Image (cartoon, rainbow, N blue to C red; front, side, top):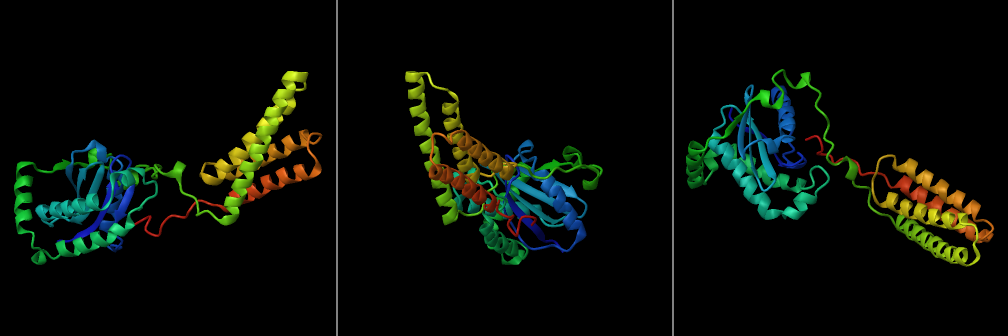
Length: 302
């Protein structure tokens, strides 16, 4: 039976999947070919804007435009003209629905997963060609394919001539440094504001210490302690807002620096001031620990 089995929209520059059909094909051969499709998605910029790849009883077709590629997996006897008309409809709908600035700034896989509804409906139409009313478009596409045939991608070009299991296929890494964190909470916002307040207080006292140093030739170590305290507070705010590697460890180190600076400055601050700075540091460290990266969407491995 000639059918479209799977379709996806992918950002061409890094292979980030933007949307995809969510049906789970039970055919093992189709599942294996989808692995080849994922490898191909990371090399899209190396190929022309209209391509076909044959793998066993299946074909992978895709078109690219404006930095976005539209890919599909179908049975080998599915008509090529229907396949590329299907991809053309996905392209027209996607570029009119979403702005390029949002596409280029997307950092999570399947950021436009709601487009799956259109993919599913279009896939159903093209899996029942008798219901199609786009006869003129089919004729135009047939002429275009005859004049400019799709580029045939070989498995050798992907380094997959020995199969998908004979190579180490690195996991997608394009989004790891910018993974989104869980939504902000009220306590998290309060902790961040308090950290900014502490940073401001340290900065003001630091400038006053600089003035005193210039006038009285005092010890410069207090100036350093105030500015280090400022930097530690600001860095805690940064760790609370952004996801980085070793984030929790860095937050504990920043809190340790806050404690050390306040221990050194104990003669210049009363007990309540010391308690306030250390407590805010501890509270912010806790909020950084509690605000974890968002889990992958349910369709991540679609």
